[in-house]
Image 1 (tube, rainbow, N blue to C red):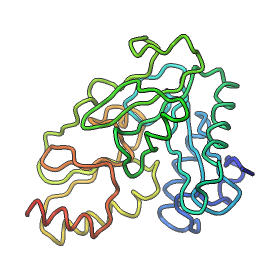
Image 2 (cartoon, rainbow, N blue to C red):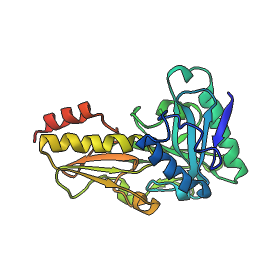
Image 3 (tube, rainbow, N blue to C red):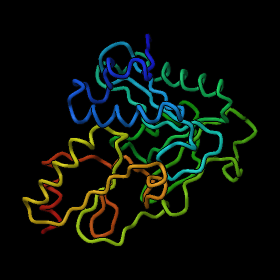
Length: 257
């Protein structure tokens, strides 16, 4: 696979695979602004030169916007190969790029958040296990922190070096009423769909609060494992899926106003 790495030098001219549009789109503006501030921290975004959803984004775990403790690991923010890009070995190519880069940086291994079953916006757990990732930790309701170590002797999940969720994220809950959306600008879709969900809630006359996590510290303190987007209802965690207007309206109808 021919690939290209997005850097500060080519950020404006290159498209972001998950949201292919022009630089005036609010999704692109939000995502690229977020990326621009992360490059100095070691953020890396590698994509196929072909136009499509085929990329991997990763960052040293100490700079990851998640409630995870993973000393000297590389954290995979997003790893997505879909549509016509699937079935060509591109996932392996991208993962190998990440592994080689992480080894060069002296990292102990990789870690990534997934789930016990395949969920939208999370890497496929079956694929991760197939390529050698192991379970490091879990968090309710079914989040799984996977890790791939470069140190074969460190495979014991009780090893203090194995990545962990921070305790406050293990059992997601908020002391709030109505709908609450926690989100960051890491995923471009939040810039489009959070306002749309707020509009749907207003039209239905239900309470809906959006909390934009704007720093790594805020994200690490979040009461849930996944911080790109997390929806709560009356304090109970509901989903990490960034819902369309139609899906959110249907959820409101099911729960009642």
